[in-house]
Image 1 (spheres, protein in one colour):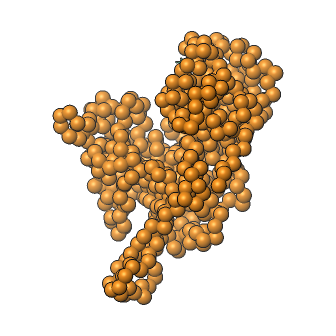
Image 2 (cartoon, helix red, strand yellow):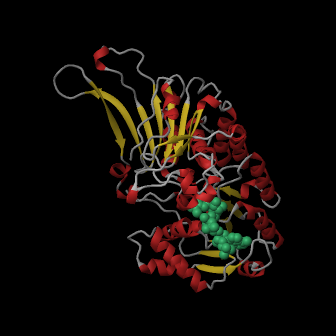
Image 3 (cartoon, helix red, strand yellow):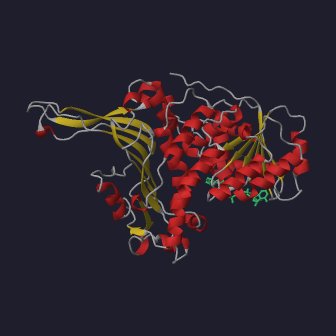
Length: 489
Ligand code: NAP
């Protein structure tokens, strides 16, 4: 099967923060890969902008190094890279001053291409950039702006960021990135649900016992310690990535695959969430591991703050108060220094109402697993008869939907989430981006939980590096007669 790459229209992409870590590790490699895939057809311009003095040639060599280090396809040779780099230029510019803006205006003057501004800078600069783009007449109605997470640290700051952008841009121009939504399997979740008649009739509390969403990391905070300690797992992961996965899993079928139809349904899920109950939420902090050469510091040591009560792990039980999900809990957990780097959504169906095979056959249930990383894919656990003689013994086996077998080797060349999302920006498709009201609703739900922790001032529970999280998180689900799925790659 041959994959279809539909080229996008010519565009000018201006990356504010074009010399930063995100541009280096994600944006520039993603653009290069789309160029190699034939999606840009050489009619694009990419302008990096930041305060550092740099010539075009220096920026190209910065991009060459970034692409070589973080993501060239082996199939893509040096010739592709040289051609791609000719699309790049650089402008020294200050988001908070006048420097560089006239040069940027001159570079863009008369261009009829699609225009997108990528705000790959801290959120403190969003308002400055938006105001200067307007002041220099750089935006037309079709101009897009892309903003990165974190989108606020609470409801008040998210509202003020939304207001700062809304002063200069219409909501249809604003693309708030949550890169989890750009993952192929996350989109497959929608395809599985709404492209088949098989699952949707069962997708409710009558047939689903519970749902688990896990985003586990094996690494610690590393060099992000200072930033992370002001944020924590609730703000950094739960409020955005896990909440978005919850919404896509739980939402009603939208009338059509259209940005606002999808986002309206996601918003209804967040609004239907019951308030988080203190007994249903567990926070954790990882401990140091090992001694000597192979030892790993604990969270407090790693962030350099012995008094920190910031959580590196959070697990919670969420209830959605609507007809579809009343009585079916959603268990969510995310954390660092866990057993493995593994993310998945597991839909755990109820037991058959009556076993005709008798008690000896044991208990069996179907589980639909959507694996986000590693090995993106979908697996359906089904119960079958164990082969061979010896009566009717049942066994659970995975019906593994390995896309490469069915769709050919191209299916293994799954584009990185940033590749997909940046091309969606150029295409003008907002479906996989968060709308302002969704972000605010998510903060509205998380704020009281964080405020309660902050006012109590209690320390999170300690957990061992390489474990599945604190014992209290295991108890959170055990007391409901259920257990977490194993965290494994
Ligand atoms: P970074 O490495 O600190 O880079 C910041 C960039 O902004 C640099 O290019 C910097 O260059 C530029 N900059 C700073 N002040 C400026 C000003 N006044 N005018 C113009 N340019 C300015 O940050 P980053 O890691 O790339 O992150 C960028 C944004 O993406 C942040 O909001 C971050 O939270 C978000 N994000 C990052 C990642 C990631 O993996 N890195 C992941 C998700 C989200 P100069 O200092 O030369 O101006």
